[in-house]
Image 1 (spheres, rainbow, N blue to C red):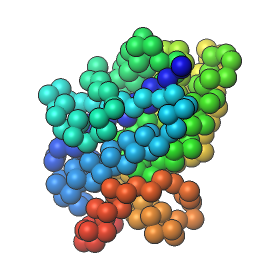
Image 2 (image 1 turned 120 degrees about the horizontal axis):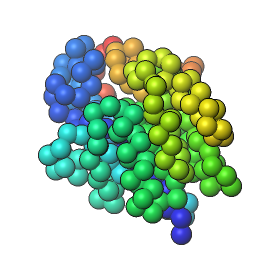
Image 3 (image 1 turned 45 degrees about the vertical axis):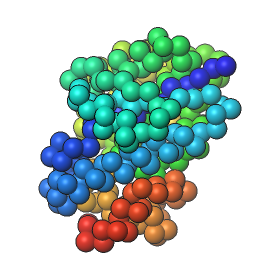
Length: 234
């Protein structure tokens, strides 16, 4: 049976090291606790992909030496893979290559900052990648980056000449794909939470008052944390 790898690109949620931009507004401890909730929720979205579709979750984590933290946060069925390289492009390429070498028929890499990531996006990406021919699936994020990249072959070109952390990331990635003749399918736009503005988007979505993002996942861990800490208010 074909098994897709779905890897969460993440840092261990340690105060002062995770969600630092958000931490300047709500405090380093609260930001790291929220980061933990985000990871639990993204992992739950992956776990909700039907097993009949063939999938396995992974935590693609940094830094070294935090395996005990990741193991506590992620389901027992998830594998752990230490990030290799300091540049995000190297991390993404290396994880794609190594998961394919491990025998997976396709790889989805998702960020750990989208707690309401809809499971249906993951299912759609797997189904698209299993169509004949080489191809890429990209989930564009509201900030110009992407929340998901899906591949069935490790194309280094997709991760080169990219200005990481800017609003041009998704567009540049599509340009790299076009340069090598790689078919591309775009998923619906979604968002990741990096600052107080996007934390406000999450609150609105969880309250059912977002006009922009609808039909997201339950985000049970993030929801419970925010309900228990009303003082954390964007």
